[in-house]
Length: 115
Length: 113
Image (cartoon, rainbow over all chains, first blue to last red):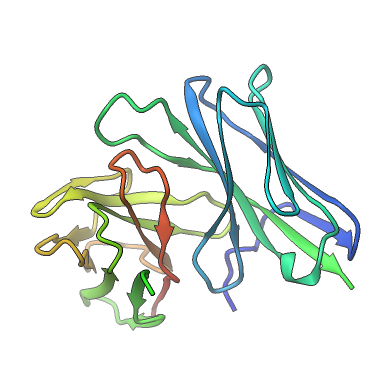
């Protein structure tokens, strides 16, 4: 299998419980944030995004919270399921002023769901 | 279905060899990217291309080369100058040149033998 998940912080959650995964970002000028899910041996998949003019956004079973004061992003997964087991990481993108905008990716958190 | 395809899924390279990783997209995206993923690290940008026949170095371009002759294709060559090539390589594309709305491929695992 893929070794992406090695050396990452791990969150173990009982099936059915809620999960909270955190991300500290570095650039106060970041304007757009994305959460990705990466299963072993696969490419990252988009989960949810949020712009800096918002502090909360909800999707299906997922919620992203943004605290710009402390440069913190969190992903909440409700009623965690075995299929949620994966590595989750955040990405930050600065304000689009034209041209290529450098995307900075976090290192990720491994979520293990205990059946 | 539209998507981005990387091949092969697993690739083995002998010391001193060049190898080429394929990345094809049928999303009509202008921008394409190559990232390297190592255990415990965030994705690191190798090269990117915002338009056909143009590409730019990313943060870790040394030992790699790319071409962008067609909109759909952005192959990455890992040359013998890359001293530590064992990694998981991800290709991505986006409609917006600013990196919004990435679609990632499924990755190629390169191992030096």
